[in-house]
Length: 153
Picture 1 (cartoon, rainbow, N blue to C red):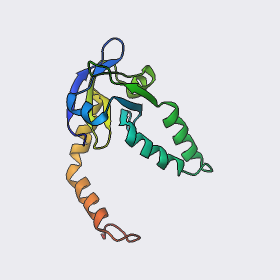
Picture 2 (cartoon, rainbow, N blue to C red):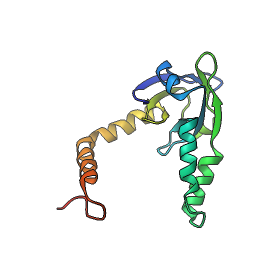
Picture 3 (cartoon, helix red, strand yellow):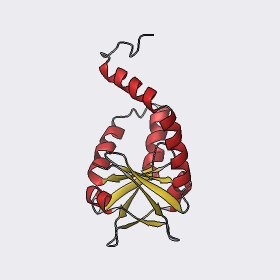
């Protein structure tokens, strides 16, 4: 399971060293693509293959599904982790995430995310402001029977 966060830097070629703890979980090859919240997502190949199966199930008749699949897949690239534990982050992904030099690598259970450190700190601070309410809403949603409202006011 990928958990924790680490502050790192990108070198002049757009490479960074992955934490040893993450390398063991990711394997020697990863798929890098855009993340949902303006970050870069790194998937171990088996998890990426599971995600591809879910993408196949999206309707080709719905514009949002087609656009989501097109952009996600067109920006995806397989990357080898070199002998020094480094990975190259393609320029298009660095531009998308606004990641220039200071980055934060976070474990997100089944994949890893790379954030520009300033953007990560801002995002994390916003989430922490609402963290207890979020936890309550998620707990209520998990407890509600299917088809019924999650919260009674």
